[in-house]
Length: 421
Image (cartoon, rainbow, N blue to C red; front, side, top):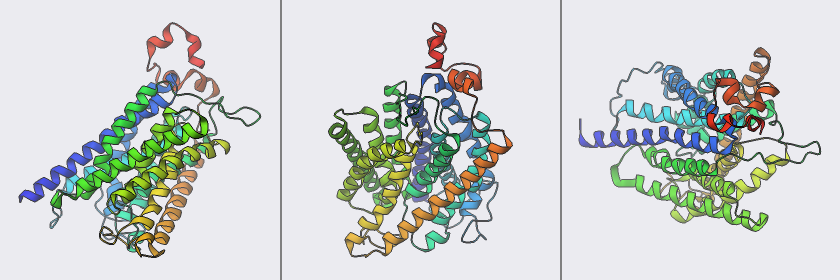
């Protein structure tokens, strides 16, 4: 066993740990962005659904993505992964498995942003199994597992489409079927801002996600040879920084206030957007990609609100709209030297070919993720007599209605009136 094998394996395992720790960032982000009466529920469901995603990925998800003897649609081997190593690789297959498992868990967590504050716990459980079996692995196989989009040269280095857009389209299906939270919209169609209970939690969540993203993107190099992971990390950080600045400035200009949630969403949008292109573009392009993502997320949030789509965690804007832009951006900015997959982008003499491949990948992946998620949830709605908790349960909060205890028991002890706020 040579030294490079060990170094690469350690690097991949470190990346896996960082990506798994992003679940902690999502707990803080989602809990802080929603109301106090649902904080414990959000934290708890994140842990148990990651557990479900892990078991399903071990049983069939990994095999559907990377299995041999498959076809353009899905892989058909390596089920119930046993920890074996594949000869000829420069890293541990087991470390790679854990790394890929972490990505599957993030896609599911993104999807659950559209369920927040109103879905039954039982719906989370069943959807987690089905999404982790038949939605995420299929799209991941198309792009990363040698499927038909890989054959067309689809560029998605670390998952703007595979992880983020896939999760966002599932979230869209959920928001449509669950309908808005009580009190979100008035009879005249105007929207109320159901403020999250802790901006400090939200900001800490974003910072944890930002750090975890170095595992997400730089870890996807799958090795330390030639130090290329440092370049990927640099592009990742620049895009996040540009997204935060862009979103803050545009909210300041348009609204007259430098809105903190908008700025935080801008940083995340920059991270999501650069995820596809971080290994394919120059540093100046990473700044441009992040800056555009920050502005895009501001207008995307306004758009979905006008469409009466209640998205409490802004999954559709941060992970969906920014995921689309990030995927398309490689078709513009990918350089001949860095485009190890596919062709150079439009601005580097590659014409519109790669941009067309990127657009095709976005369309079919989004359509598949939305359609299958919608059908799954529609069937669950019929079988389970609704996806949503009762009005009374929603008003008192999912902490008490689904779990029997509050995330902040002392805060509710002195004033029961707070329960309905």
